[in-house]
Image (cartoon, rainbow, N blue to C red):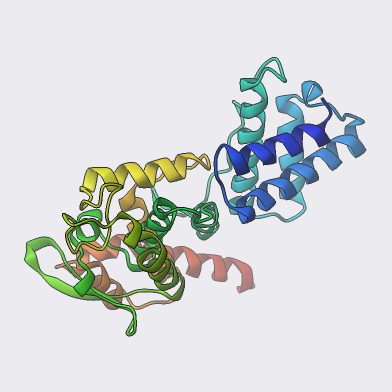
Length: 296
């Protein structure tokens, strides 16, 4: 099978068997079509069976030289790994040549922090069709948009959320209550869940918890962990709830937010806990200095 038909079958698999969104399908299609075009033009190859790990690494090196960022290359690595793993699983190639493919390291990022591109990639992968899709997208959006602890989200009730004002009131460690802003995208996802998902799961035994399970019950923190990990694994990312909280804080600080404001939103009792994120600003300052100072 040539690359064209194989690619079409793979995209159909993403849509039907994995239930991934149209945006996610399009992203993968663009990556794989670009690779197939490069493979044909530079190597004269058109069959996945002929592809080697050297071809993949050479292609990504050329993309890097063309100015593609490490974060974007990481997403291309994910698409290529998913594609060749799928081919190998269906015996369309003798082995998974992308198994040894490594994503580039992100210099200066916090340990266990997603890039903005990876977060967008994860959120775009969910195309809500049923109530659980609407729920899972709302869960991921809230964890990232508001930096909630997973236990705080599990305990949150309907009366703690104000869609009109764009805030959620949560009870954190030490039984302390705080108000946290909810971003526009997250509000849209939560509103869709409340209108098109949650009512289909509610029964006479349901509580007033914001997030419910398939039987209308409140979810445990462990179940929320499982949901996040499963959704991320579907797009070849390793994500757990606290990673989204780390990413929330990192991206805010990198964008210029005040550390005290981030401390308040995270619910940290001590500013020293929040200061683990300050190296992001330090990295940005170093980059600016290296770029613009005449003797850097």
